[in-house]
Image (cartoon, rainbow, N blue to C red):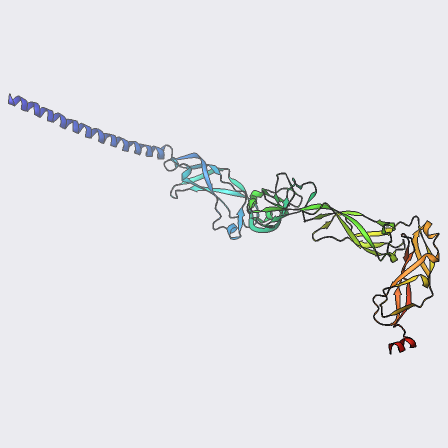
Length: 445
């Protein structure tokens, strides 16, 4: 019985050994078969298909200016964009049969780029494996057009552009400026040369009643003909770094007049037929709290200088900061002669009044009469006027010493408030100390 069990055990062990041997033989056969297949493929590649043509798509083109003449001369490519090419290659099947886009190197040939301009440049392709016998049959596209220029800087003034900003009623937009007032722009020299104007633009609409700064929304580049330029070609500061400043002035009306000076007591100044070339003008002022209107005197005209023929010119006086909007900086003052006339009269010494003689002096008129005194006034008044109605006064309040003095007369027609004397009329006056008689001297003794 024991002998039977031993035989069974030996039989099981023998089976396991045979299975292991069979598996080892099978693995060896598989490896051998693979090696034979590779050798067969290699032989077939060499004998049956020694060379093949293959097209590889999507090969990236490398654009580099390192070490080129273009780089040495400071040129830059303006319009180049990354691209890929399709390449047809030819070579041994066993060498190029597994090629992909990563096994090829495509570059742009910059050998002919020596100055500014637009060039048609070849695209060169080669294998990245230096030992492989790979021939480039075709490249699509085979060339690319690239523009080259120098990159420089240009500084130009910035002008405001705000077509929809205005002032409220009663105000005016005096001026608009930009700060900072200049901008530095980098870019191709040929493109920079086209820039004639740079505007800081504000496109929103608003009415203003006081000075207001606003942040620029955009920077616009223009050529000499006013055409917009492509700003993507330039490098420059952001538009938000520029402020457009609006200066607001208030509109104001000046009511103009002239004064009449050196008039006799009671004279009616309104009787003078004055004409102004403009009796009011428009101005603008930076003082926003001032009234809408203001009365302004141009100056004074002496009454004795008015003969109804002469024209007086006065410069328009303005307050600090005001701007005259009329276009004229002076006003002509003339007189309407219609209904007025003149006549010559004689002034007698008895009708001359000496005023203000110092108490310790005596005064005496040397002239008996003053002839050819010219008076102006309404025709109906002058025609009825007589010499006896002509009077004058002389002020002696400034007398300090005795002596002979020539004094100007203030001449007028008695009880006539609209008649005046033209020209200068003088009288000779003697001023002396009072005489003391003999009886007075004995009394004093």
